[in-house]
Image (spheres, rainbow, N blue to C red):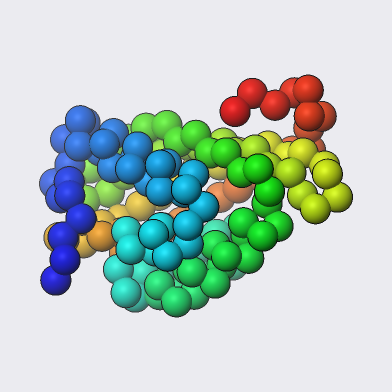
Length: 136
């Protein structure tokens, strides 16, 4: 099985490294690349959606980035334990009507022994903003 370093148990340094890797991958807006950080049978809750497995992850992210244009994400360390990391995040995007939004939320991540994320639970709120209010 392929490993995705850093591996648990996480230190503060390796937890922050894992967070930066996730931020970079999501900002690539490449669903296939992002999906490789997750187990084949990864479980997600994203807002009110339940997503299971890499195939559903790729479909979800493909749809997301077709509708959330000019997407830019920033993740911040919240806490960690041996194989879990919690982050707060915000991202900005423009919809197809040209309206801008900032989304705020928290994610709880659980990793397997190979450093792949097996659970991702995201709570997210969107706020419509003016283009002049963007800062990401």
